[in-house]
Image (cartoon, rainbow, N blue to C red; front, top):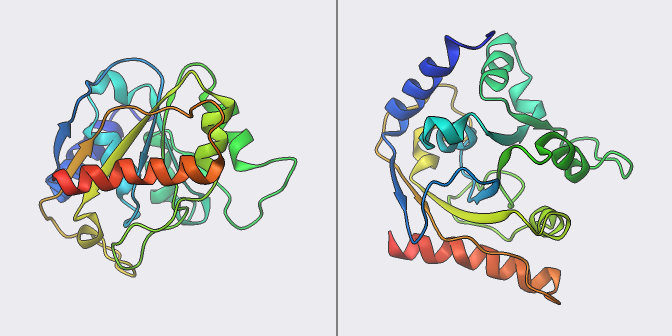
Length: 204
């Protein structure tokens, strides 16, 4: 395989720089199709979450990541290919080729997804309001579990504007799944989804 050697190196580096400990709260690492949605403070977030999953889940999980960042230079392109990222164009979003359609097509009925509902990275480490993407995914795929993920301290591993990561201890907390409830509005759902990560933060 093209990335057979790169993948274990990436996993090792991600774990070294993040020092991440992983907690599954009221849930287990199951091989079913899921959408892991997390707070976002670092470009390394998708790689670190992906690397933290057990290998059998990692092989069936694809992070959504910013095309404008991960296509800069051959090294980033190679890394994005190794962790099978779905590269999203944030600059030119078109109605007939929306990111939601792209994501749904690429995960199909096989892959789980890692997504960051804030859209961009938080500059201050605080979690901002969620954009509508998670709601549309939940509406179109009501069969898929939505798993809240809280990343702690990742904004200090690769601060905004820095090129090289700094080894620090971080933690990843994965909480019990939620689903879009019947008749639930977009606003109510997004508030509830965000609150599920806030609860994980408060428990940590």
